[in-house]
Length: 236
Image (cartoon, rainbow, N blue to C red; front, side):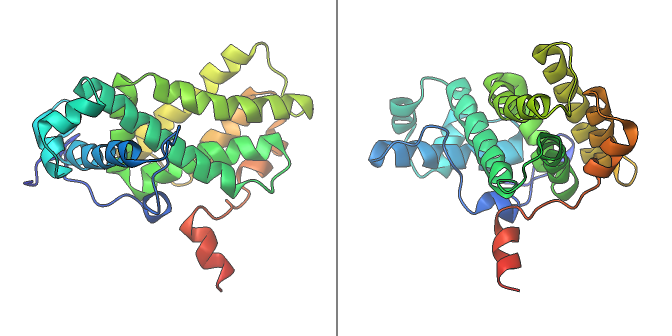
């Protein structure tokens, strides 16, 4: 595969280590069929990285996976079906990594800030992957729906703890999603100032009803280790 461009960038580097340690299908099923589907998802990630979603073909994805086109169609009806599987796998893997990192955190507000900042972390550490994720979400709306379920849990926790004061859940989720998505793109395209993740998380917490000073303090707390970061930390 030659070095073409995706989103105006060269072909992408490997997934960040915290994600590459094992993709997690949202509904894992045992057996050869599931392993084959995951191989096709992994191949699609490679092709999307180099070509973008629109520039990819079923034939190239199957070839990268070491399979025939016929095998591809035994598992997915169209490229769009595979794109949705890629979206679900990337979303589920990142969300699971984030959720695992803050299992010990009791405050809904801090969990909310961590989740937002970790997506912006991806935009800073690996801009091309962050932009790819946004490209996939544009053609696979369930990616956003899956993320919203994680956000909703933290939102409801914050409401129960009296940290958040919202009008409706839908309005709150739209505000969170809109602010975070735009911040991801701003960071990934090199247009953000230093600590834009903290500034955005602070504004979102304020929008959810927290006092300015409290929101700023929560948003700037150190992020808990993510994935292999946590493993490295325990070995020090």
